[in-house]
Amino acid sequence: MKLKLFVVMCVLLIVGCDYFNTGTVRVATKRESVKSVYLLGYIENRDTHFDPFNTKNLTSMLKFELLDAGYGILLIDDYVKSGDDSNSKKESTSANDASKALLAGDANALKGGDFGSRILKESEIKSFQGVANFDYLIQGAIAMGDNRKLLDKTESGIVFLEIFDKSGKIVTSINYTIEGKVLTEPEMLKAICSKIIDKIDKREEKKPWWKIL
Image (cartoon, rainbow, N blue to C red; front, side, top):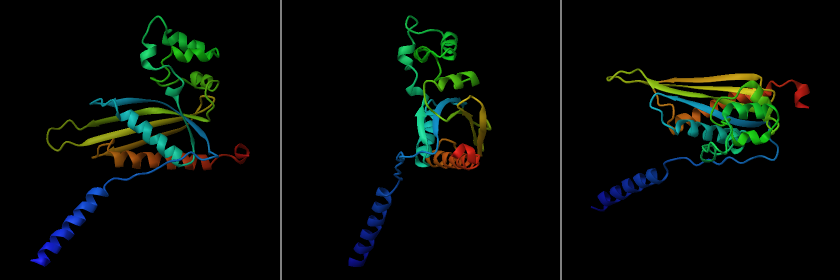
């Protein structure tokens, strides 16, 4: 009887430990000296089911991994007016007028533009340098779908990211494709962003010596 009770207690202890030890906690801290500063721009949502949080989760994970790898982070949303404020026609200019104003060097154009909700053009990226001090801008898209079969349904996904320098010139294009898994699962998203940062690290290591000094 005592042996059975002991076995039961051991099983409960093991199960309890497994329950409380599930999940992973990681902490990323900004370093005193960063490698480069990245401005995280708009990531388009091309999900066939259109989950509005897919792009936000990708951006958040990218932000974490970049910070953890020693890069400085800026968010384009911090420099543009919130959606609630920009909805008023009386207080906001058209997107086209805002773009022209930004190109002319008017930082106030960010209050009425849609720069945080679309892919920026080369000229706009270059002009944005007068508002935010960054080395590179990241923008792109996340696409998700399936094979449209009722039986043996297979998920697939692609992440497209393009990196631009402060002059608006594209310097790197990255894509990550996956079949048979859900792209936005937490561990999968973590793995994808980690691999993307590895690619960015390798690109940074190839900088000419005169740009490092």
